[in-house]
Amino acid sequence: MMCLKDGTTQTLRPKLWEAEAATEAHNDLLMSVTIEVNEILEEVAKNPPQPHLELSLILFQSRYMLAWTSPMRGLTPDDDPIEIAKAFRLRRDDPDYPVSEEEE
Image (cartoon, rainbow, N blue to C red):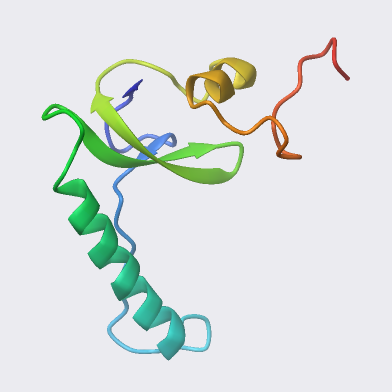
């Protein structure tokens, strides 16, 4: 999958922010889970299916998906949502799956 490089609203670096101390909004449980998720993502990123691919978080219709991407021009948030969904082979039975105007 070719996507835009980091810094866009579409492709995000696969790492969560880690807090120095717990807060009401980010308590000890969330701090612990964040560390675990980052460790998992770091391990996964070490084994791309092809050397030129990078692990990324893709933002599509307000939800994230992990994907192997090439940081170059490809899909953008401005592309047709149905084409994006097809490219990622998203589940059609998901209630958030985009529908064409003809299907509405």
